Amino acid sequence: MWYDNQFTEALNIQYPIIQAGMAGSTTPELVASVSNKGGLGCIGAGYFTTEKLEQEIEQVRSLTTQPFGVNLFVPGQHTYTNEQVERMNAWLKPYRKALNLEEPVINISEAQQFNQAIHMIIKKKIPVCCFTFGIPSQDIIKQLKDAQVTLIGTATSVDEAIENEQAGMDIVVAQGSEAGGHRGSFLPSKQQSTPLIGTMSLIPQIVDQVTIPVVAAGGIMDGRGVLASQVLGAQGVQMGTAFLTTVESGANDLVKQAVLHSKETDTVVTDVFSGKFARGIHNEFVEKLSQYVGVLPPYPVQNQLTNAIRKTAASNGKREWTHMWSGQSPRLATAQHVDQFMDNLVEQIEALLKAVQ
Image (cartoon, helix red, strand yellow):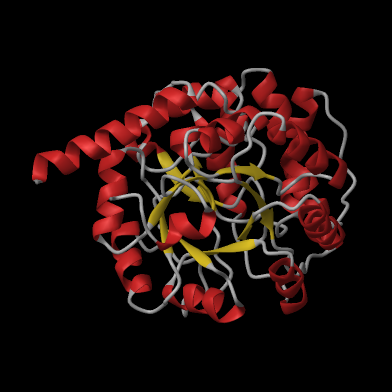
């Protein structure tokens, strides 16, 4: 059976499908619907307060009895200067003026928020915890393992995958360059840049170097992508953009429509929105701020400086001033309910398998 393997056994799910933890775009309805259909729904808790996370967990639990996960951002080291912030505020002033916004106050509380989220996951007996932007400390890994939480890491290169396995991750998501949203990179390449290895190239190379199950991510939107990933050695897939445009997604309708009406050449990898590289649809904001690449404040400082601009612009229908995360296969995106999407996905996979038997 295409869905019966070490990966689905480890997560106690029917189908090897993970809904990506799209911070800011997941809803309890999305997470629960994916889990109810046999996949693994994930709460995108990267920006959540502890109170918000607890509320989301309780809401998901009221909608499903199936396993689900929580996706967290691993805190990084931040080096920035007041001069960088002042300079960026000057560059962002025209946008804030047009949207009637005040300058935000920078508040770096990532580590504290992350630690509180870990305690909440243990307290609420969440079965799966996914990590992006790095690997947590051995102390945190031990706490989670002692609580029988299955750990999923993210890698954009073979070296990152090896580090995930050596640290104690149970499963690793191999994120190809086609993936929408933030890159999960945490080890710089020799060129001191974010790795951008395509999914088809990345998967078999990682599979050959680690013993834990590998999950493919990046550009996978339908049954063809699922089966192609398995042929390359992956035991499952993580899908983001495919779920972003579903009815249950919490993404702004402006973003959903932008993805649904985009083509494969419309996306770029940029760090102008958050200070961390992410793939999204090219627009005026990306074009204008790209001239400052190299001198931008790092994540999460840049993220906080542009946050209100992006949210207000999206609410006001200004797609040229907000982020619109998307993978490289937007032509395959559909506006369906999750139940319908999952049913169609499984049917397509089984039809493809029957055709080649």
